[in-house]
Amino acid sequence: MNAIDRLVEQIKKKNNPTVMGLDPRIESVPAYIKNEAYKKYGQTLKGASEAILEFNKKLIDATADLIPAVKPQMAFFELLGEEGVRVFRETCEYAKAKDLLVIGDVKRGDIGSTAEAYSSAYLGKVKIEQREQAVFDIDFITINPYLGQDSIEPFLEDCTRYGKGIFILVKTSNKSSGDVQDILNFGGKFLFEHVAGLVDKWGKVLVGQSGYSAVGAVVGATYPDQIITLREVLEKAFILVPGYGAQGGTSADAAKAFKKDGLGAIVNASRSIAQAYKSDRWKNTYCEERFDEVARVEVIRMRDELNKEIARKITGH
Amino acid sequence: MNAIDRLVEQIKKKNNPTVMGLDPRIESVPAYIKNEAYKKYGQTLKGASEAILEFNKKLIDATADLIPAVKPQMAFFELLGEEGVRVFRETCEYAKAKDLLVIGDVKRGDIGSTAEAYSSAYLGKVKIEQREQAVFDIDFITINPYLGQDSIEPFLEDCTRYGKGIFILVKTSNKSSGDVQDILNFGGKFLFEHVAGLVDKWGKVLVGQSGYSAVGAVVGATYPDQIITLREVLEKAFILVPGYGAQGGTSADAAKAFKKDGLGAIVNASRSIAQAYKSDRWKNTYCEERFDEVARVEVIRMRDELNKEIARKITGH
Image (cartoon, rainbow over all chains, first blue to last red; front, side, top):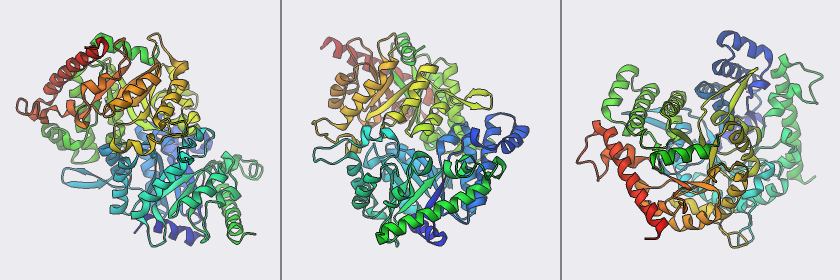
């Protein structure tokens, strides 16, 4: 089944177009979890990795019935070497077992057979002698478009073969994203608009029953005007919207990425959920030990606020 | 010591501006190595990883006295999950112990604290409670520029702090690289020229005793005309040149990346060295079991051919 159809199904079932980002910085894991892991494995890469795995599992347990997907950020796992990569894989497996879709935020981009290797690792299978086996086997990954079409094709093939999807960086949420993405071309178009056109073109072969393509785009909530432009250019693409919450994007900003059918986007929140216990909104009500409980409360609050803004956008008032 | 100065020192010492790419596809590892690993660990991700580690070590043993650096391609390690990432780390350690510089071809690119995590993983250190520890601890990595300056800054800081370097993708060697990189801007400049300007600017703070910066650029040998243009724009940057050999770039093409001082570039060869035993040039002389011996012969051949072309470029005849 087309990956975007599976995502749409989960979004509808849970009435929630948000994805929980898992950006597990070791310094943000509650002390009681860290101490238990350190007792067993020491203050080592393995100890930190085990603490992060436990932290992720508790966040998933607390929210799995409310959210359609999780988005683990590979950098924070890679930071802990092979032990971190193992718990990335185990976090993904845990989430899948709870019926969640997994969007691996890996932002890979490479050429030819190297792109094939990345694609096989995350979306497809590796062949060892006569036997094919899955490695990370997740639903979606994020991709960097700088290397052009032949760097995307291996992923498109695996998306078709295995029912997977990709989200291609178009306009990222960071302050300097314009250094390259806002270059104006000869025709007066921004580079991010040109890339959006490529995303739409590349995605044509992967449009599902939902009318959306398994080739989506990343557009930051911190650039609401650009979201409006891109929502027009991206006819069939789902938009993955980072930058909500801690980075400054609001629900009203994110709502601009949705279409009249109330679909077409998924909004990521990482710190605002996983570290809700530290936030101004919740820190006086919840202590660190109840981080998972308040994560759930924050997911519900965000869902309701976002749904209200989406309804407002659709109805126009 | 500035990373680029360490690289220049090695290049001068060995009179060789080539880097051996380690792109270990399991299907290209000689059968006798694979079978030994499979006997111990099965035809598993671990078995394949151990075979690749052994293959890499033998290639390094055969060439370490002749080359300044190796460039492992992360995708082929990630393809084998956490076991692959472990042997990536062990391959890097093995190369460093043989006095080789290591350029991790990871093409990472992300924002803010995520970029910091990648930088800490490859160039810097991770802090677990009060203790800082290195993870991969290699000399250089490759970086994707699509996300702009604030995605580069964490790497620049670690380059300064730990004496490391980066190579930023400017014009990649693949056929479709122009889809994004050749966009003409309003001023009639190609995007890759604009990015080269950024590379030069970002690298100003990291110029070493050699006169070169620890912030380099990736420009494919498959685009010789663009190399000429970029060699002018990139005043202080070392150019990492992929695309030689199997991808079609020649020594004469690659020589265009060098400056009058005979330095300023490093040329990568992966398949043409590691799989020299399969090449038209050598397959009738060497069998698979002697892959490391012929790798050494090919490194010498390539070195001499490249040095001849560089001399020709400098003297003009």
